[in-house]
Length: 230
Image (cartoon, rainbow, N blue to C red; front, top):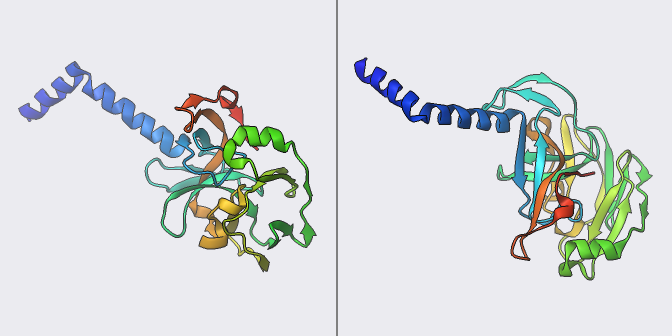
């Protein structure tokens, strides 16, 4: 017991105990309240760019016990158009995607054009020159369109190549969601790994903390600091 007391006294004197408590509190905050992650891929271009640091509201849908994933209370439900983080059904990796299909929705895709519950989603022109400057040289030949997803219009990229199969109409099962990336031709999403269960959704992406251009020696993209996303 004396050794334990001496060890506890050393922890207090050295400040190690305070450091451990601070780190535990920080990890608990990131686990259950809010988190931030770097965007490693271009599957959500032009909404999210490689090098963006996203802010994730982990209380948007559920209150969870830190470090466990145990749901203590439900605060809301994911909505069509939300950008969410989740675990991939195929390998458990963290993903950032947009909810396109809600439980019970009828979805089809033809030539990269969505139909939701029997209504064709409206597509329209956007300022492609500005978006190409934002994305960089890789987007020189890409097409950008406004996609009028019901209740949540946003911009998508059609980069050509890649894989973009048509999908005959199907119904999203109860308790599950159909996810897609905004970079439609370069996104591994529900078209390949299937539906995502409600319990696999970790949080709602609400904005950007900052952004670094990885192709320009990590130069800050100041216009993308502290801003929301749609």
